[in-house]
Length: 252
Image (cartoon, rainbow, N blue to C red; front, side, top):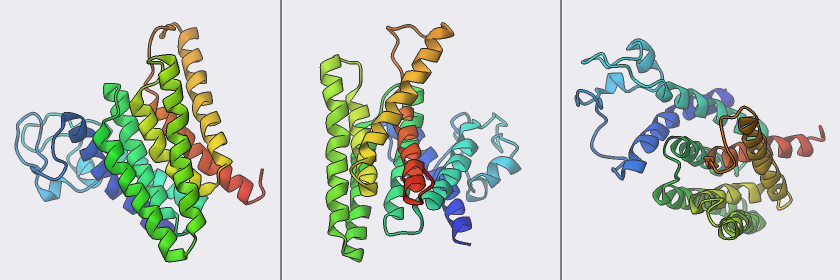
């Protein structure tokens, strides 16, 4: 029952992630005005704004102008639902789980924005970082595990510091937006334990390198082309959860 609720919660927050993905890069408020069709401008009624279900019932089209609604919307909702479930299965229903789920929301939104616009807005990483840190402060206070909070902040510091150093030394090889997203993800990775920061960066850069080499072999990318690195940071974060679960359960 608990896992089903987490899945449903992820789908609901996936709808909120879509709002972030659409509005934050444009500098628009995420709370007002109400959502409307980008083609005809008609406000979307509550019955047509139910996560996933409305898209299916409307057959992926606006009720009024019949212009197709991007497949991205249901994919993000389903995706975040699956990711929330994955996190609950790997991390378990502990005090740290809410903070991990907030990190999932921020990470997925940042990865999607980076893929579309090749940037990660400061507004997202700033408020995302505040939300993640607040969740872990609350968890630490509720459980009395002060060490949890210490490891989280250490994770955030290292999460930012390493990519920041690469960004400075490479002179544009990595963006500051990536470093700020890595800070947010590092807050959550630190909760798992300091050594998992090593796995996080190993997996992140491993995924990025494999993808880059593959694209160059396929001649769809040159050495001078840049990659949206946010998705690899988030993939590294999700993967390190699995590594933590396997090591903690003695399966690896």
